[in-house]
Length: 173
Image 1 (tube, rainbow, N blue to C red):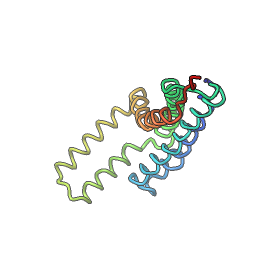
Image 2: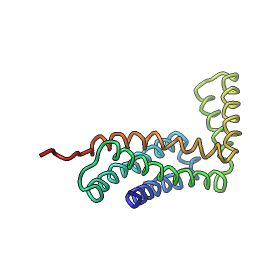
Image 3: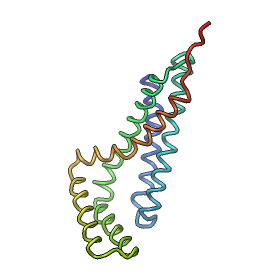
Image 4: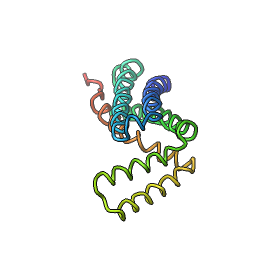
């Protein structure tokens, strides 16, 4: 199982990392809204490898048969490896490439709020909330934990669906 999980997890992680490295440094040009769409599209593409990883495990390691639980565990393990790559890349980008990310994101949110006609009080409240969140982000452990929660739900859904689609039990007979 280890070889399958590492192979497919690292490939998925490479896709997640590449998408982030391509989009985040250029967020001012792309825009945060489009960047988020690109990011989650990259996650969906990357987590397609969960399906292929479970199928590879079933066909090449498990003799063509796998239960839902085992398939889910393989998918979850691939998700964890890929998510760890995502988190490592985000840490590098956040601390080394775009240390001003918090300021740029805050400016973007304020600009969007002004464009939509929000009141000054609401804009001030949003700004305060973002600054508080970004203060939490300065703690590397909190940053890691929060970052890990971004791709995890997507991978979890792919693990559940793939496990359901790929489960195959022996035919009694």
